Length: 153
Image (cartoon, rainbow, N blue to C red; front, side, top):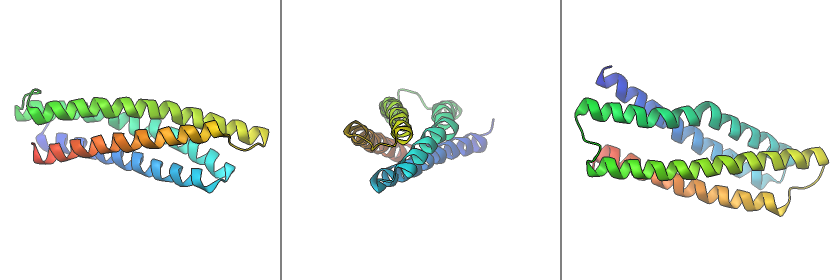
């Protein structure tokens, strides 16, 4: 596989990873603040779906294409910027997995409230709080990785 193909795959998967993740976070964040249960239910369903269709495949492609690029360029996995990037990616991935678990719980709580024609309870909004902060730290780590990939420090 050529360098151009690998870098295209790597950058495209990064766009999907950060773009879909950021877009989903924005729409879920705004839906939760609307206090409109129908909007919240729909948003939660779409965020979970987007994670399965876009974020998960991108999260798998990123390290594979990255390692192939490093191999192509003969860059060691133990180069400081690569090692830091990998550790941050693992950290971000762990936060993302926890956030996905919370997303599924929030989706189920919202659907249950919709079926019972009740309001979302404090437990839902507690999960929103944790989910938001997991996302902030995960995106911050991804931003550092992005910086390291470009400037290779």
